[in-house]
Image 1 (spheres, rainbow, N blue to C red):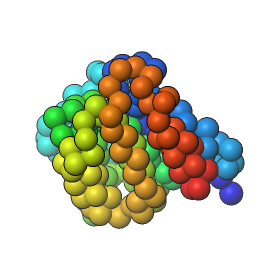
Image 2: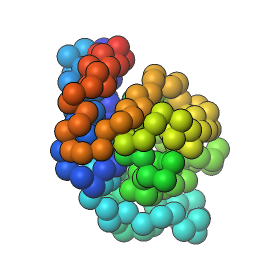
Image 3: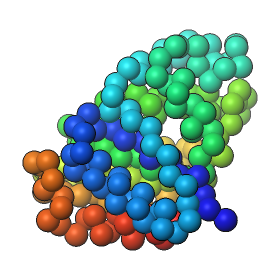
Length: 182
């Protein structure tokens, strides 16, 4: 039976290296019979969590009225979450962080909404060398542990800066194979 895969796109640069990596992953996942949906956090319009507790008082995932209202139903239907981001100052970029910070209603025992996400994947790109991903890797691993997800893998594509640089590497093939292996 196919899984519902939600790809969280973080890059504001359309058709950049992160988007190409996500598309390759999606191609592999769809070839294995999974359904892929995208949420483009790179468009912005998502405020950070205010820790106001409104999600606990109202029963809604969040009281803020922004683009996360589009994301919550997608998150709640997903079996697999694929986090895609360019590396910004040794971590996930702000657009992805804003979405992940808004997981607040899902992170307590008294959840007002529930996630069915069981598995996750991290896809990242950067111009730098591999060790610069250490901060992002730690953030992702802690999130996986806290949310009790199974990590299905990471592709940390280094050495790609200009739009399309990733096309001359093996990272797209790796992403497609990882998607097909879900």
